[in-house]
Every structure is written in structure tokens, then in C-alpha cells.
Image 1 (cartoon, one colour):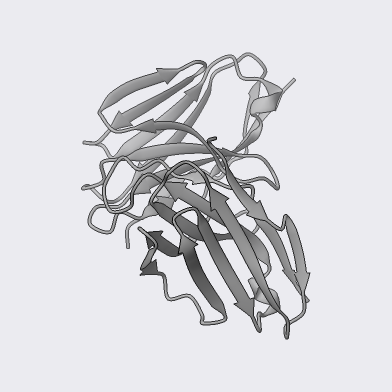
Image 2 (cartoon, chains in turn blue, green):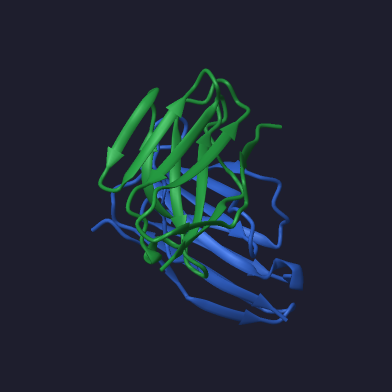
Length: 115
Length: 111
């Protein structure tokens, strides 16, 4: 199984809602990533987990809260988002993080719309 | 600020032609380079990785790396309309080991 899965595919939420994005991989990878991608822009790194520990937080606002319950799962908890947070949220995984030669594999993404 | 630059395009080529996509990077210490294809509304899909100077071929795709000149390119032979997509160049930065993506080149293959 060489897939990264994400749920839900689409999410519409109000600014006062709390929701979560989920990501799962079964490739035995030890590093997992959250990216945000706006239209016609490249993916922007948000968070990196390595061996289930948060290793990189790219100064993301606290309304985004990541969680890594185990080596296969990655969640992104959302609370009090703004309309400008509407974007495609991508999960990725790689064998390791912190050295060269790491190929990252992306999930299909969650299209988030904040009203 | 470590940067990865690509021409945004669109790059239009006729079906059957060779498409040539280029990427330059600023971090001289980078060792790893990747090409991703992204269809509109979809997620990036890894096409090629390259770590050593020279050419690496995989089917219709050839990646070329020149670390001295700090550029990496992707050639697509016998281009097909299904190759029409945005191609993202990614570089692992030295020290932090983060992926830095270029802005992508939009390729249009005309039938």
C-alpha cells in the first residue's frame, strides 16, 4: 500500500466551528507533513512530525493545531478560522525527515472553505 | 531566503514534441531535487527525484541536474495532452531539510 489518504475531501465551515482534518499512511514512514496550498501557488509547509513528535512549526497561527496520535495518523484541528484560511490542505509522508533523499508522497488533499 | 525559481508559463508544445521545464535554486548546499506533477484541483504527484549531476531517465521523463550552475530541468518526450498540468520543482534545503517548492510551470500540450 503506497497511499496517503485524507478525509474529508471537502469541508465547509463557519468561523466559529471546530473541525478536524485527518490523514493516514501505511507506508511505514516516520515523517508526516501538513501543507497549505492556495490557488496557483506552491504548497506551503505548516507542520512536520518526525517519529510522532512535532519537529517543525512554521509559525502557524494557533487556530491550527496538529496532532499525531501514532506513526500512521496525523490530524489537523481547526478552530475559529478566517475566510483567508480557505485553501487545499495537503498531508504528505516520507521515510524520514532531517536528511537528504527524502521523497515526499502527498495525499489527495482536503478542500477547505471558511465562510 | 532560500529560493526555487521556475517560469510560470504557460509553456505550450504540440503533441509529440519535447517539453523542457527548468528550475533554478539558490541554496548551493542542496543535494536533493524533485519534480512533481499537479493537475488542476488535485494534489502533487512525484514524477522524479535526482541527486547526482547528470541525467536520470524514467520512461518519457528525463531529469537533468547541474549543481555547479544550480539548475535542474525536466524533459518530457513525446508529450501528450494528458501531460498538461503544472510541474513543481522541489528542493531540500541544506541544514533544515525542508522542501522548498518553486511556483510551478504550467504546461499545455496541444492536440
